[in-house]
Image 1 (spheres, one colour):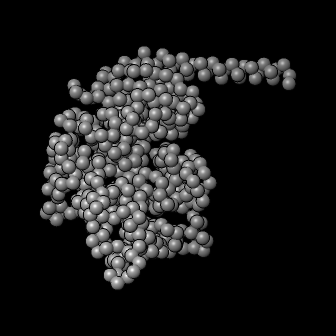
Image 2 (spheres, helix red, strand yellow):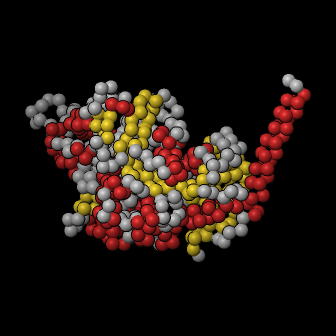
Image 3 (cartoon, rainbow, N blue to C red):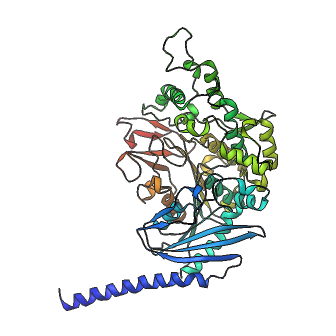
Length: 526
């Protein structure tokens, strides 16, 4: 090596070191420089890549005490006052390898848990990213009790406040500010994304909203109504998890091949109208291990039916068939559903002794009449978002065990009818994708790795990553025709068994051949 080459390498090394030092020292000083009304900075710290970050203050019920951070970033933790009796805990993560994009993450359930895995995931992709605790700590609904300001944070204010503060901090931290603004969330996070579209149309250029808990009040009622149907495990109407597998196997037997391929996955549950009477035990049969009693069959039929209100109006569509094995231990487990019970206890009735075991349709009506802060999130006119140039990509897994994918299709129709627009016009700014073989926000039996988080990551190319597909739509005008999913052999990062292109509604996937069903080109959107 010549002396010139050696000096050049040393110069490059010292420049990189200086750049590192500059980023670190900027981060160290940043907390003291922040002066935004109602914002109290708890700390700003540099986090080097490949750190297993200890989350000592994370509430135990949130379920994790550390987070792997793969890239160098500046972490800023804050308390932000939202009223004279409420505040949110907010974190902003600023990556060294910044791509000029701002992003907000969301939450899950009724929880007050910052989704650190989403912060780590989006920072890794170069976004300046924020996440908040939804106005309270932990997964219980108790903080809502006699506290309407906390309910308001949950309904809409937490995310919007985080966006306002986060955008200002991003402009202060990076000289170039940000070019575009994005949102990524699933479940409650999906609802929060839609609430932003409906209420704050200028907050985001692109929203990725998965399995959204829209129609929220009726979702709580729907989740609550399963226990009165099944009863406790001692009831003759109750089905064990093993018995729900009997139901699932029969539904797959009747419906799997409708799409042309026998692969254990229902591509379009709309076409699946299972007849469960086939499972009724023959009274004279000696072997009754693969059949059900009439009471159990009736209960299963009710569970898989829509929920209608006291005056006969549709409150919530049916649970889509195919989700039985995933749903059984959570939704049909012989006890009242926790989130629903908490909502009725601490918001609807302000009565901590109220029991989900006593749920009736009168409770559903009372909750809907209340609808605090329009947390229903069911506005059909999203023209202000359309006029602002926003784009929304809405997806829902067709094996979702917590929020029926049929509700997403109902909302799509609601927007189409309200705005008087056919799908070809909605496609310009709103696209909805059904993800077969995906459970609630991930997992499931099929090609569910679409890149909306660490648990479904299969690279950052737009065709393999729903968030980067949104970036491409917003920044290059190239809208996604399909959402491509990966079927992992054993979780993300493991071998990909096959890929499948999921269709945008109202198209459905049909197996045409000639290849095996694992060949993505053997399928067609019709």
